[in-house]
Amino acid sequence: MRRVIWLLCVVFGVVLASSAVYASILPPLIPTNPTPADGGILNPEEQNRLTWELGHAGLTTSSLGDIVRYDVFFGKAGQMTLASQNLAEPWFEPDELEPATEYQWQVISRDYNNQVFPGPVWTFTCIQWMQVSVDGTSLYWRILKPDGYAALLCNIIVCSNDAVGLTFGPQMADLTASEGDSIPTWYTFGQNLDEALRLRGWIRAADLAGRSFPGLFPKSDEGTRIEVWGRLEPVECTSAGSLSNDFDLILTLSNP
Image (cartoon, rainbow, N blue to C red; front, side):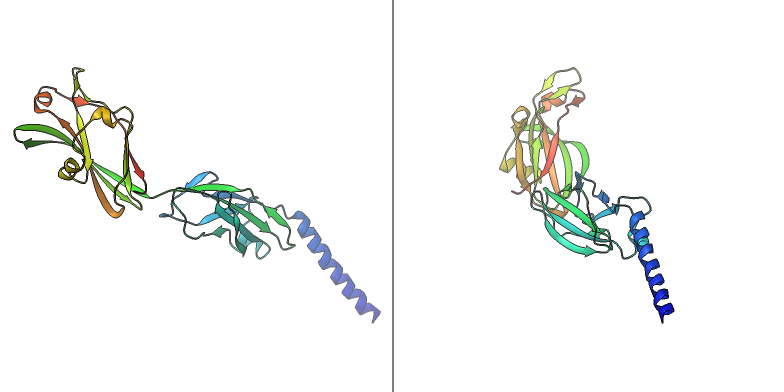
């Protein structure tokens, strides 16, 4: 009977020793390498999964088996709360994200001894979705009796999840001829020229400098056409040769 008891004690001692050695060689399991990157952006139209890795090469969830679990804190900046507990895989998908909003999140890993390894607090900004294509610029003649004029047309196609506004750059000015002379220039914009003229008419280039027009065009997944027209008087454009002007046309997603 004494021999049996002694053998059981030996076996039990070996098990304890093995666990102690394994715990001592296991490095800290600190979450790192977040996606999206800290301070980066996230487009929810493409993906909304947050992922991370462990802080040591070669250590993964699969290699560590069941000895690592994750708790995730998540929320708008300054409003983090516990969002999920006891995750077995290094990823988390938050609920619906608000556009143009900064979020914070933190992952805390726990090993099989329930030892806690907090990761840093990470941030990202959720962007609004906007896809833009520009058809290019064309020259049109439009005859309005008794006068005619030439119009430069720029077609922009925008797909977005919110209303689209226009902001004109601060350097808006008249077009310049190849000889260096300034050519009086007016602009208008809308979904077609007739609508644009009816709503706002022609606006002198200098009067548009730095001006914003938020929420002009409705949101559309299939594409909204934005037309920006530049007007030149016939006598000017027939004698001007090549014309040039650089200005910024900024598209913004905004609520009307």
